[in-house]
Image 1 (cartoon, helix red, strand yellow):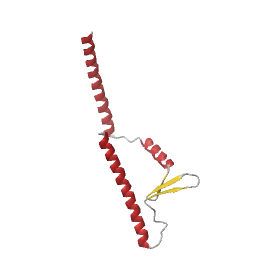
Image 2 (cartoon, rainbow, N blue to C red):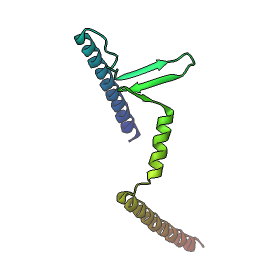
Image 3 (cartoon, rainbow, N blue to C red):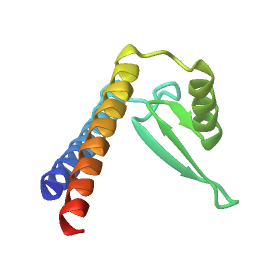
Image 4 (cartoon, helix red, strand yellow):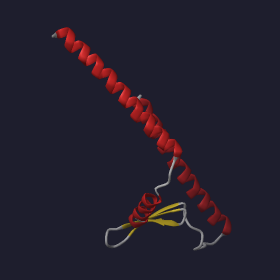
Length: 116
């Protein structure tokens, strides 16, 4: 099962990387077709290094920073959206956990009475 999941993860990573390379190639083709460089035409994936050693990444023209990711995480935590399926899943998990605990306690007590 772990081997299968690893293969799927590698395959998805390769396909995502292939899509980004394809988008970059399409962008370069559009630039060649125009005959001039348009500064408004952004690359699909671009990483720029600055003199301070910091890296800036942009995907489809949108800059990606750690502050953006932290702000999105904080926003998601504030939303606290109610999902009925999540609640049902949590209740079902606690029910199953309780049933298994009772069954294991009963079996343990039965074994203890037989051994004693």
